[in-house]
Length: 380
Image: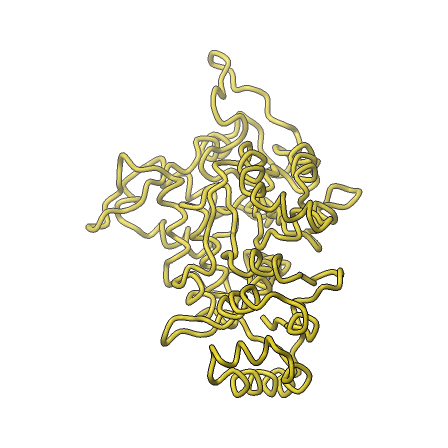
């Protein structure tokens, strides 16, 4: 990320603030990659008092900045942010810049303990600079935040954004201008053309000052453009796991001996429509999650769901899928765990060696995972 400190900052800023900002932008642990790159035309600021003072603190200041400027020019790079007193998009004054660049990048998930495995797989396989991204994790420059479930997202974000309210008010900006992160939410869709389920949630986030424009279009199709919020296009994280993982599970001896798990996998691995894999609730089966029966009668299921799976509630395959895949992981001996949970163990399958960019792209189908990777990479 290239950050331009403009001449007017060197001319007008309080030295203490400029020095602090420079330390934030230039420091990184020994042996690590740099966090930021600084663009300063030293020929324009060389005679300023602040440059002379900063040079007294940083003996190699001009040499460092000149090398940075040459690299910026040679690489034909773009400036991501300007430190300036001019009010424009992606411009910060020095006080704003200290607040913004001193914070880590935040990837806010409904459940960061479990869903983070999915995001780490995206970074590993879709970020060309994945080693740099993981270095940012190791240095605490990027971190996962736990929203505590979809229904708690507005409460979490309200608390998270409060620290920006004073600076936003002072500079007549939105709090989202200082939110250096991305919020990723399950769509919870049960079939492709189902109406968008999170309109009420989006209204709450909009009230908080977040940019919810271009999340969906007029036909309720998720498009996720120009926003720090990303709604998954498939039902949830589990629906992006490649089919090879389920083929692998079918081959495990302990699963072969568990009739319910084996029956579920036999039906799942023989589904014929890509959308069936996109919108099935893998862990819980068809809605509702709980209380599926009224006495001995299965409660009604949306006809669009039955149509998607070409099933009725009386079909044996429906009944097998309806039980959900009650997988709780394997122990060190390859035996099925008990006392754990699907939500804790299933995401770990994204770490398997058989998961790769090729089969993730095939399961994705429309480049969404690459777009998520690009959004994360652009935050660094």
